[in-house]
Image (cartoon, rainbow, N blue to C red; front, side, top):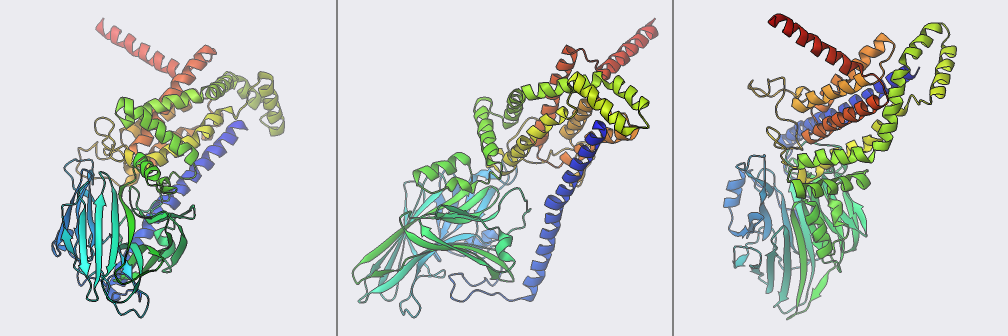
Length: 591
């Protein structure tokens, strides 16, 4: 009965994995492609629409290549150790930013990551700041079409740029832009009233992202809106608001809000003493969808001869753990580290990452860090695993007696069960003990998967040889003869070297355990390693390396315990006999 229970458990777990794979990976990709096709059809059928009274610009007449869109307007260059780009003097907006330390592929010669892009580009993504007036105001304010005058440049750490614009009514707008050596911009907006009448103005800051680039949607990582208001995380996804063009409002003193991708984020960080109302919004735009994160601040009256100013911080860059935490502390940004999606197992995920990063500082390779970390995990669970392996060793010793009981009581299953339970109690064996190490390590497995998937430190992190990115699928596969044939197989056939090793080590592990008595069960269990090999092949290479190395350590530990307990290891005995027979035949041929 224990074998049948194990069989049912194994089949159930496999079914859960297979169904989960279809539901969480395959179906979202199909839905995303269907949505993309529908969006294309809608764009062809519908004219551009912009919400009334919005600070959103009108849709461009045509979409241009990014380089051509940048060339259309005068700009101030941005040149820092970590970013390059430019500020658009039309609208004084930040709409051109590239990350110098990050490339599109592991090839160091591949293009830099393009984070922000101008309105006329295929995938606009930019930051706009300014002032707006109450309804009915007659004085003109700068908007996204206003051309500003620049003083200074290029923008660099310690070298600020000042932009100015004077309205016909005599309002002098000054924007001072500063940047640190990493990814934080500081923008101070000042307005001086040189007219003869008081004016009422409200500052605002917004991030606009029309026409999202095609991306793979994953249940394991949040992409979309993100922010903190009143000490509470706000994180609706794109789809949550886009389906019905919803707006999600929030308000409070301080906080922050932005738009996040898997690895990158653009965030507005207001003065933490300012009262502000914010919103996340999705709306129809140019036949597609646009997404907006916005802050509006309390109105302020500027008397003749007086001035008002407000300071904004803008983060635009990679979600590096240490960097995000440093900004959280140095700028007193509440819960800014929540920008990194550690998931439900955050109490495991973040410590696992910190452990891997700590080891990395000594070995300089995240793949080696995973191998060393796995050893520590095995040591941590060593007592539990040892108990389990001893129980399985005893089970294997008892296998002849179990077979005898099956034969004697084959017509009376109740009696067979009673006799087997009595045997297990007498020998102090728990048939389910072998499942405990697997069950305990499942949270570790998923947490490591999360770390590999969401942390930018793992992106393009090499191991050795052909594995140049631990966060990606192993690039070579047996189906195309490890790259010798000029084609890339579909994901479910991406069976590389480490998936093969993982399947082999799982098979060896199963051979060390007591085999089921029923031939059908034996065949089913015999297929399990190869089923898992196919299922794990599309996962990140770092995760498959972890599982394979964990299997190897488990085999060594189980072999040691079985030998120490005097349990025969049939697999190794058979391999030894075959080897000795082969050697004897070779010696005979020589004679």
